[in-house]
Image (tube, rainbow, N blue to C red; front, top):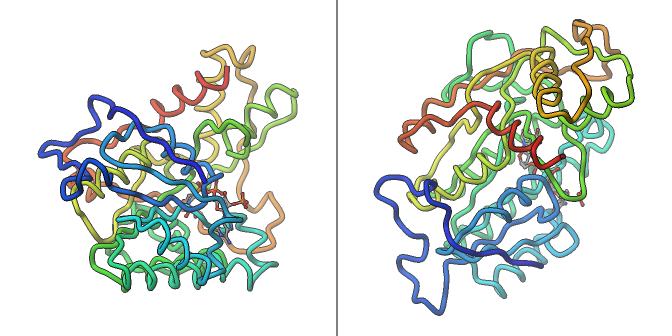
Length: 317
Ligand SMILES: NC(=O)c1ccc[n+]([C@@H]2O[C@H](COP(=O)([O-])OP(=O)(O)OC[C@H]3O[C@@H](n4cnc5c(N)ncnc54)[C@H](OP(=O)(O)O)[C@@H]3O)[C@@H](O)[C@H]2O)c1
């Protein structure tokens, strides 16, 4: 378990800024328990200065979504005012194989956590996925568009977000997509994969018929805390601006990596259709989400993924 706090960066306070510890005394800061403590979004949260809150990070072994007794005990001991649940089973292909485990982490676990939080009057922030949509629409999806998960990962994530929203009106679900950021020990994102392949002079192929919105985890972390400060609840599409195809995303990464001298030059990328890759399961093609509701709620544009990408690449140098 670890905690992070420090001065709030100028600029992340929205108008009408409402400190999280408004109702707490100086000796008892607003405590936020962050699950999935070793993951990408949790790391981004740990890097944000939060003088108005104490963030307590719990990794899987200490706070396992499949162990309700352990979760309840932690909430009893720590007594947080909010939980940010970044934990999830995110290996989309493996979800088809490890069906019970992935369902336990993505569906039953968040439902149990939401129940425990509701009982203790603890606010819960949870994350959903663009994969809840079937991809047939071809224009950006809004929060009220019908869902139709095509695979076991998506079905589990949908059941999880629905349980969280049902449990309490103050709970937040932020659906996001193609999350990327720098992490001190992990290099698992698409950005890492593309740069590694370019450095090893491997041939690059990327799909032109799959599109979504790359989202910088640091931005997602900032939005999450802003929404908590506002006392907002409900479902939001939490993505950066500008949907792109995998092919354009790969080209964007290579161009920025070359400009930042992480690679000598941008190698060519061969455009292919998703049918080129032998698929063991169905994935939606087009899952670009519209972020207008969140942008309106925060009172500002959410920014392009290009800015986040540049910041991430600067850290990779
Ligand atoms: N990454 C994306 O592109 C993407 C896209 C759409 C939605 N999202 C959602 O955004 C949220 C944050 O994702 P992320 O990118 O930060 O994910 P991440 O880097 O994969 O982190 C998830 C963390 O959850 C932990 N975990 C796995 N099983 C657990 C369990 N049973 N109990 C407790 N913790 C467990 C993992 O621990 P181990 O490392 O020990 O396994 C990992 O540290 C998730 O809800 C995810 O579904 C992400």
